[in-house]
Length: 503
Image (cartoon, rainbow, N blue to C red; front, side, top):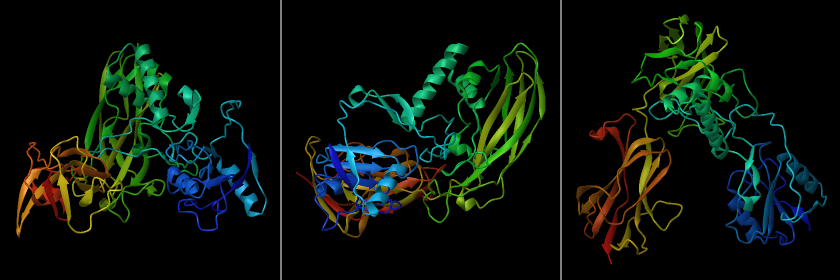
């Protein structure tokens, strides 16, 4: 089948191309392939707008040179076929369309077409962290991720109904690879002890250079981005040195663990002398001018390092013996209000040819003083977008869980993670109010930095139903390291009033 291409935008730099409804005067798209640049809104939204204009066939072109997976728009029933091509190819076609040329694609039936693998060298982020990888550390400043693994554009098995093989990216690729490495190491070493395996995988990992998505720099990537570095399966399986820890977490300014220790154990048959040192990794600033953390790419990364002092710079360990090393940190003098995260590695080079690194991190500033709740408000369970309710609202609830009714929803919009989110119900009687405590299934522990909705079916935490009447939500989020028994440790937002009665 041969069909001509048509593009809603001839601007190959516009990430929002296709995100808005198509204008009046759009040609009949039923016998065209609509070529849309990836970016801004979802594949589904772009496909929906095309379908609303009569399109049946959609082809996306990438907004990055390599690394993205194919689109899924199965819920847009009017679209019969969808595909994706490279950024370079898509831009070339758009350029031809802009010049007034007609571009016709000859499509073959995927059920009978031969399968081929086309590869493109990743010259921007190959060997570095993908731009879409999750940053850490944890909110308690533990070192995560533990290690890095290949996960971008990985060829692997896939459900047979989808072709048996596919090239996709993400944790769906990285995690199985690390799981397999753990299995191999456990088999070689004859142990399933989690701490031992974790220490071996982390200490033998290979630190990576920082890459903002445009090419590697001469700075080591922040530990919060790549952990100990890229896994090295063989080294971890056959190392004859075992470190007692997989990382060192110095915490924040309030809770600074200035000196931490780790042990070096020689599992080999010969005496080994280890030379110890340290190397700094890039510092990453959490905030700039918002209560929300900056996103990557775009957050500020600098070469400001902590000072590391080791109790020994050289140590000799006999076979079967061990040695203890103290590591003392002096954090860099930085603006603590922006929560800069510093990190790096303690390095160990043995006379037996083995080399190891132990990642560390810490933060300048107070996690406890950091605001966690942006706002809280009332919404409706029938609103998939969880928009705020303007003014008061009334709800007719049912004590029959199987009955589908519209319920009031307390929405906590978190700017930072919280160890506990509590949704309390405030009874309103004229000018008087009474705190009735948590609603059913509240509080919620370890809430992520996200929109956190909690539907209210009329029940309190103990399962009892409140009487018909007027209420408000008190939406509360506990500060990191906060004392839940102290009111000042919580960020609080009170919702608009609402009334409830029962069927």
